Image (cartoon, rainbow, N blue to C red):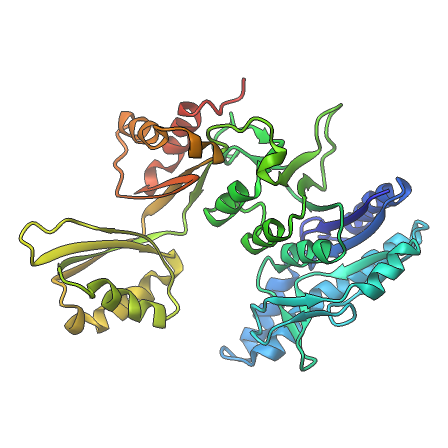
Length: 411
């Protein structure tokens, strides 16, 4: 007998029939003798509607009251799934964040989990009662509802699995696992049966939408084994149902490269003719930090005359207008000659823990792109990742070329 946490996203519980389908999947695990807790998102589209209601009342609104409104979507789903389980003979009850309790900090709208007291929930589960937990939400020390930010139900599920000392956390979604790249673009993409926490974290942060970044961070910190699988598809024959996200030592033979990720949420800014002197980077990025604008890839050109240089960096596409505005306001103190911005770029990344022990990974990437006539604008690297910024129009060509170059195509 295992203790499992199952998480179902918005598309999985999108209507009454889908909620009934989820109940059947939960029943399969209960019938197999497992203790089960279920974490649910709001029905697809509901959270967006609730957010829109808040904006219609007031564009600038109290974030604590915003949380009270948007958390109601998960409350509805948890109650409906509990009823659906009871209807097919499975003892179940719903749990809201404050009932567990899941204690979160006071940063309403994007709270972080501080601790979870699972004693009451655990006792219920040991008596054979399925706990259906409303994801995305907790309660502050002051007794106010707090939400964990968009995609927070994944984080709720992994945190609950860690607190319950669950054997596994299964994340059910509308895809059947983690792929070597986006299968909608690269038909030869393969499903990965196992992937390391570090690789999954890079994939999540670089554009793969399968898991939310914070949930992967938490799984890695607490060594929670996570499985990504489809609500709507059954694995054929002996095939593994999804992708397991695990410690590196659980993967016997690690591939050089596990996947190719991409992010369209990138925009490039270049400051031309910046004074080349100590402290200039701090003066550039300080105002952006004060405006809560995250900077990602950074490259500074070598100064030929020793007096001026060019500074290029990327920000989120949604922040490009604000970033330009902030930098133009600071032009007198930054003393740059000209500002150039470009939102038509994409970041493509090659990811794999196998890179640690192999040379030439970056060179293979650069050659594959050069052979296709794709110009690299910015490069950044880490121990298990090489990222490049290219023109957005070359996204699909780059993904297919790199997927083939690293031997990731289906055989």
